[in-house]
Length: 444
Image (cartoon, rainbow, N blue to C red; front, side, top):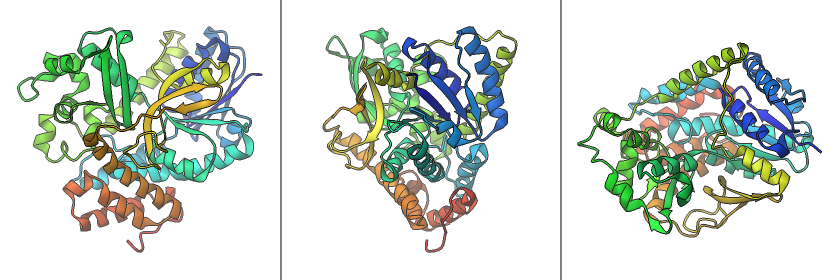
């Protein structure tokens, strides 16, 4: 019996197309049913143009479903791929622009800090509704593969409101290890690695070839940041980025998030315009990313109209691998975001952590890591307190927890006073109130 895969937030610029292509490259998934839901008819229509061409040329014979109705898309679904951006660019611009009035600058603003908490609150409201709908109309064995940030808050909230398996997925571990392999000129298939931490603040804790530690070579090759123009002299290290190399030199390990994003997790890199310039960190890149993604998606749609779109290469995303392993019982190893429950000993039990997982017909099964280096656990722990408070704010609809979350945030509290954080909290909640039913700024 074929499986049904539902994409919620399917109008995501190009990402749905990438995942569909990956899925249909798997021979045992080629007969699956596909359903695509988005709140925008225009985005769905563009996605249909793109997919109609692709599905025709690979001889996929079933008729996909395109709908504005989430319940229709979720009905009898076995796998749900969650891709929503609640509030879209307009809401995200508020998350970025309001803090700037307080001299608090962000780069991406989707996972941590003010932007991450605000986006998390909007998304958790949606996720609860989606999960309750899945419980009513989807397959009893339905699994959610979540690509929507902030992973930690979303996974933690999902675990509080539903028993539907909710697996957080990212490409930062597999992307970073590929960059590291290039940096030391070692073929990727000769690399062995281990990673652990939280999403976007996970660390490559083992990096070897044939039992040889490659970190000494990586550190030897890393240019001296304050003497070398990385953007022109070394394109490999440009992709790793100055802040990440600086972080590795200080803490001993490579972090999995980009140099542009890592500054939002730790209080060292976004403090002043001069420091940001020195490390080549740009604020508001979320807007630029959206603009670039919109343009790129538009180009793909036009190429599909003209029947000139090249066939895509397999991506490094885990979605298709997970579905294939669960359907065929051919196991695979991935990295996923799951509730800790002892997986990383020196992080809180209820935290969402990113660890290696084995996948087969029994689902996604996290592997215990043990203790991670204490200096890295310290950085993760600071973020986890923010996540816990934000999830508590969602569960209790109590704005005080939003204020406490931002007071705990290591970047926010390194730049703003407690009174400034209070004022900012009220302004953000007021700006996003249409997405946050039941929240009130009273009592902060």
